[in-house]
Length: 151
Image (cartoon, rainbow, N blue to C red; front, side):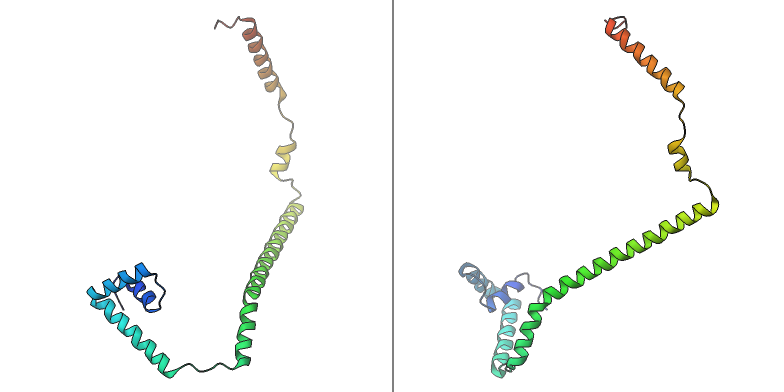
């Protein structure tokens, strides 16, 4: 395996994917880097072997089948993801329903009203609130009359 940072550029150079300026820079690099020169020689040798043996021609039916499966690929993936989300939502709904049912069954069995429900409807002490309101009203009157000692 190559350790030169230019390795990816050597592959792109071999494949003819570089522009003119990049191609010239890689050729200059190849003259000074034996690792990259050896990698380019290896790539050329491998390409020559592949070209010499040629590729087997894929039967038309197999090629058509491949194209059909590629066309259906994204649709199958989207459907699969949708099925997973629907299953997860159904599971959450089921677990929540069972949990609520068990809570109501426990409450019915004990005959007690939950504390939060009793606190929400409990009568509040209004005498303390009335005293606070009176103090606030007196402060406002004193402030408006200028008798608060700050003027």
